[in-house]
Length: 129
Ligand SMILES: [Zn+2]
Ligand SMILES: [Zn+2]
Image 1 (cartoon, helix red, strand yellow):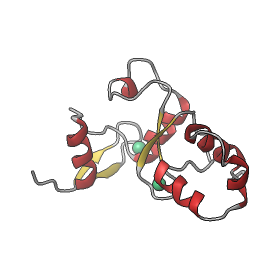
Image 2: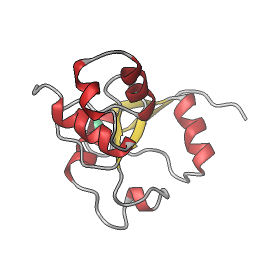
Image 3: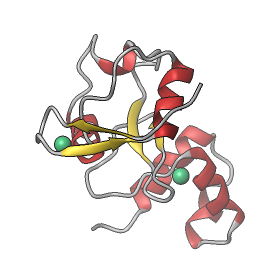
């Protein structure tokens, strides 16, 4: 199956955004029936504000404790087991692992806690915007 980039209109801000071939493949893979209704900024803003029961995440098969967000490092869509704070960087698991392999100061203290908790610690220690 071939996918091509499509131009969609955001239901929130009315702006146009690109539903890329890669995202379409992702949607197809996840068997999402509907096109995305919002551009990324609006989507992440909503994800930060509320996860309404019955809407979105649950329907997409994601556990309700997880929040959909966009990785501040590589920009892919990911889920985190907490509500990201607006303006603070959130990393996907892959980028988090990459950062762990590097030697930043924050890593040493969190070496021994489980992955989901580690992400929380990184978010909590991230510099205020
Ligand atoms: Zn928008
Ligand atoms: Zn990432």
